[in-house]
Length: 251
Image (tube, rainbow, N blue to C red; front, side, top):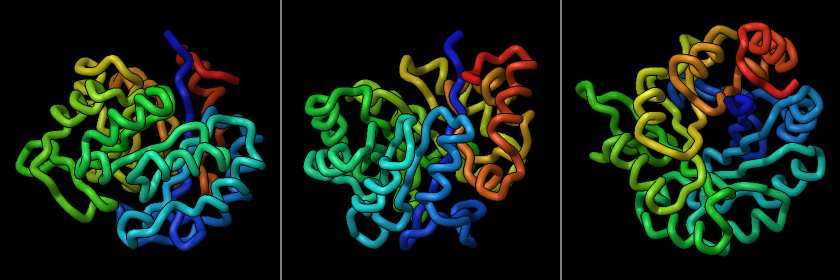
């Protein structure tokens, strides 16, 4: 089994790290450059930086902030928010991003996935999917979870893979910020359906939740924000505990 990855997520709004519950009620969580530096030193496997207001406010991801973060860290770094073209990706990669994450723009223009994979390689194209259950079916949502679509989570995930994405970041809006655990049933179904890595997001509250998403959800990586930002879980402690549970992690 490949080593499971632990990934802190920096949700950025107006240049600050923020965190909410179910995508709303955001509160300040600190300076993104300082947090990124601390996570890199603490043993995080990767870092995800999402400018959550970029798509909503129709502006581009803050490339200068990306550059400042990239200068501080020595782990793979994924950047998302407001990316809608090959040119956007080119700028971010030149500013220090290792991978990019696209979400709303991929739904609006699925060909973008093909174009980015062809230009930069699948290995640096992550498609983020925000979904919640409506009448028992998982439906994809856009613009930071504000706009529901008729897209089925599993059908869209398969199309994303077929178009050349190298990885999927699945966030359960129902679980986001609740600290009640990840959407392991949906994650396990995605794992059966796809051949590319899946990052679980939404619901981390304690160490056991990470163990469960790796064992029950079959996730390849687990992403979390508030439990790391507010030091409810320390990454070295988490990794040591996972290792003791027999889950392969990089210490």
